Image 1 (cartoon, rainbow, N blue to C red):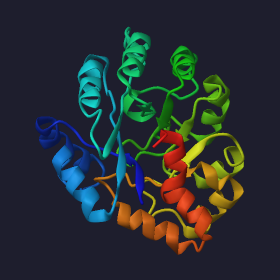
Image 2: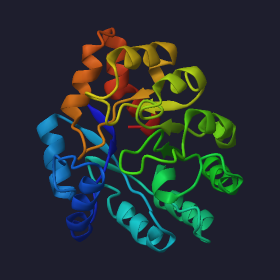
Image 3: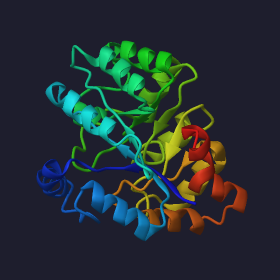
Image 4: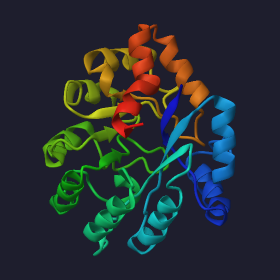
Length: 264
């Protein structure tokens, strides 16, 4: 079994516009599929992925409801687990979290670079506390975004400051805890209650860093993620298997941790 905790897809018409723009601003990264749901599921089958968490992002307050309507429309799909999103500038952010939870959405994606907030800003605390109250999962884009390199809005140091705001609700720092900030991840986040996903790491994170982060943290808090369409599950699995971890740890990362977290 494989569970990919970090994929992206869009409504068909949105995908036709969004994928070329995202590719261009990221230095011409070639997507593995066109960003549409049918293509995502075909790619999952090709890569042997049983379930995938579809991370939706509200990049401005006005699109928040449409983004979340799309997420809700995916509920009940046998392969996809949709997460919603709220925008910090939306006056409806708290009620939108309640709507998502009532619909059955299990988690929220926040992208501090796309949504223009620092992860430890005081204005975010009511949103974090509501997420905690609802018992939802939060996925943060963490570290550098290659399309928006400066400033980095979610550094390991900043993320550490707000983890207590979530109580026992799970928090996931994508990209091994902070893309391109892995030494800071080891210093500030390893050993805390945060989860890391492996998204967009194959060929990018030094393997020694990846293994050291896993062994310094808790293997039960590492989740396979690909960042499809910007990487592939096959490549990210190849990275994990190259680290020569024992079978129990490897299986925990590839599917068992996600099964527990998502109650699959």
